[in-house]
Amino acid sequence: MKKDITALIPVKKTSDRVKEKNTRKFSNTSLYELKLKQISSLLCFDHLGGSDRYAHIPVKPYENGDPIEKAVTFIKQKEQLVEYFTSLNQKGLSFNVSSKEFDPYRFKNDETVEFSDWFSSKMKSSASA
Image 1 (cartoon, rainbow, N blue to C red):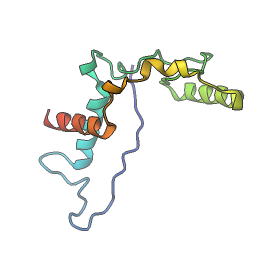
Image 2 (image 1 turned 90 degrees about the horizontal axis):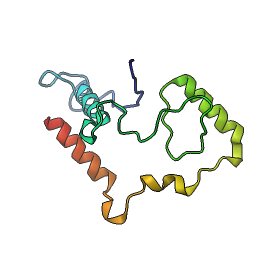
Image 3 (image 1 turned 45 degrees about the horizontal axis):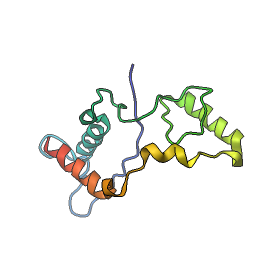
């Protein structure tokens, strides 16, 4: 089964110093292609023990009719996203996710790291791979 991820990657169209720098080939790739490869390697998460692109997501995929009061919801198909948002809209202001739902995803103080430091280290390691 084919699995897609939709993402927005901001790329500046013009540059004052280097014409078409994001799409121009450097060493057989462009800056834009390099960024796509880095992001997809981060999403594979094989280093976390999973063999699937979505193995890092700690929940089973949402299916129509599943409860939506969860800390993490993983939606694979756009039809399910419509169902999810319809359910969310029906709940309105009564929608609430218990704080306990988030406990498995919280780090202890000695386990935390700044996101920018973590992301930067992942980008560096995937660029050198």
